[in-house]
Length: 240
Image (cartoon, rainbow, N blue to C red; front, side, top):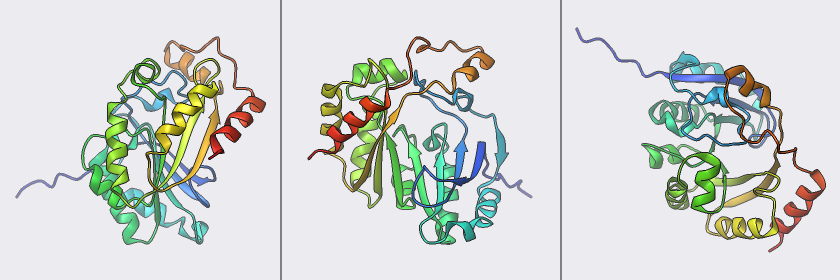
């Protein structure tokens, strides 16, 4: 008799009543593992693969279903990370199970994918796309990886029916110039079905995690983003 190889994934954490990662009240599932090393990342404890809580898609979705009464008409589940696309088989199965149970699905991603992307998008209602930078050299300096995978992701995304929310972290002296925002607008104009564009302020809330993990924090001398300047940049970005 053959032993059954059960599909499992690694979960960093589970937020039951999220209000910012998609519409309505949402479960937010933070999957473990990320190939990017973003200088401003506030969750370096999600980087390592094969750590966190091990679970099956069935166990996870069974937990999510218990929260359906809170989702009402426009809530659901958002798969975040880490980078959720780096556990593609687990993510795909979980998405399928969610759709079988009429649960709105979203993925919060940098666009760095491995396998099964078309299938994953087929079972995804909303993509929260975090664009890290606007050119390959700066993208690699900020994240440690090339921008090429993101551009490929956008091509595939444009062939899907997914709604899209764009997110972009504004870091003082790095991504906070009008010229930078102009370049960001050019990229966004090439993406279909964009419903929302949100600039997020750089903050230092995750710095202590770097100390705990004994990881050097590259932006230690950078102050949190000025909210007034962020508002000006957001208004400029929203102009036609």
